[in-house]
Image (cartoon, rainbow, N blue to C red; front, side):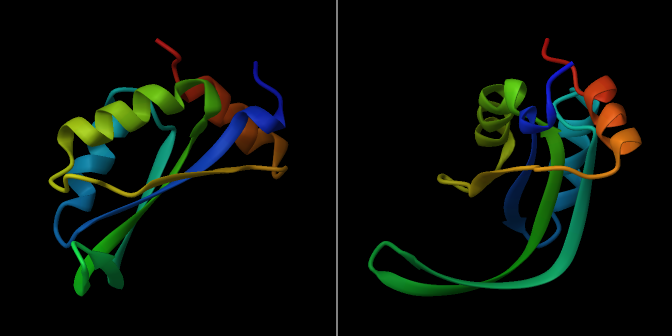
Amino acid sequence: MPSNSGRIVVLITTPKGEGKRIARALVESRLAACVNVVPGLTSLYWWQGEIQEDQEELLIVKTRADVLDRLVAEVKRIHPYSVPEVVALPILGGNPDYMKWVDEEVRPG
């Protein structure tokens, strides 16, 4: 099993109404143990030289670093944006039972 440093949280933004579909795909493929879908996000960002404002959803993905490359590839394959946001952050610690569960549910394939 990976150490605590092998566990990560991945943040992904999606267009409004797309989050649950992408979350389900990541959990079904065992690339994530759990994905929280947070609706009602307003994002402002630069795109093609202009400031854009969109209603989005935020995915909070609990997974492991050893599947990150596969997770990014899958998100790029199924996400409607040409450049989807996929940002990984390390998990420094937490409930040992929860961490064990993440380890058991994510499959490196």
